[in-house]
Length: 253
Image (cartoon, rainbow, N blue to C red; front, side):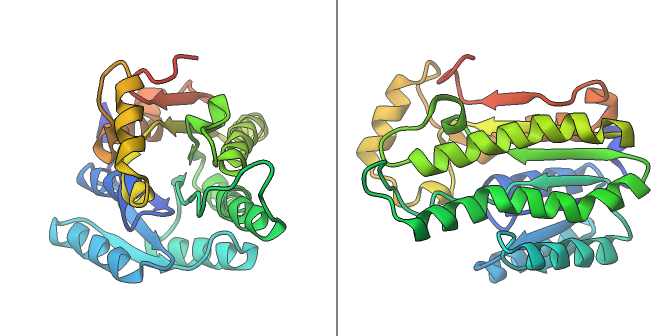
């Protein structure tokens, strides 16, 4: 049923490493032309795009901070120009940046976290909407988080609230864009081992794994199937406004 993806065009933000990179590779394998996005990690973005090309796929690279509305619009336009249009948008770029408490956060950190995780989704989606509409409809998939479901652990208050905002924005957009044939959904990963957790202490990882029914932390590849499912009209054409949790049973809403 995934043959309907062949020939589609996708922009995957935050796809130089981690979940975004795994999704970009799988979409390419299924015949999707991909715009690989990176910001600070331009070399990794270029390497990912080259890996896709070496495998016989089509890939272009777009670079910049999606948390800046002007830059986000430029990134979308470059992706559309490079791909010849847009059918799929995956707003995956996000970061916790640093752990801050409710009693200890500062305004600069709040703005940085919200720009990266919330403004980016709004800005990229706004810029992509007319192109998705012009293509006759499409799929938007936003990366949420288990933290946005239950509030997060200590030090993640701002990040968790930002991901909860992404969940809410996605539901609202699903209602707004349905008339344009655009579905909007969320994949909410749990504790996934990617560069996102490079600085997470091993003791924290071990504690988290012990609390997960499947007794292990997730991988980027564990998340890919949910994104592919939501990209495909044949698989999920009547699915919109939903959150798919990929967390090994850590949270069962």
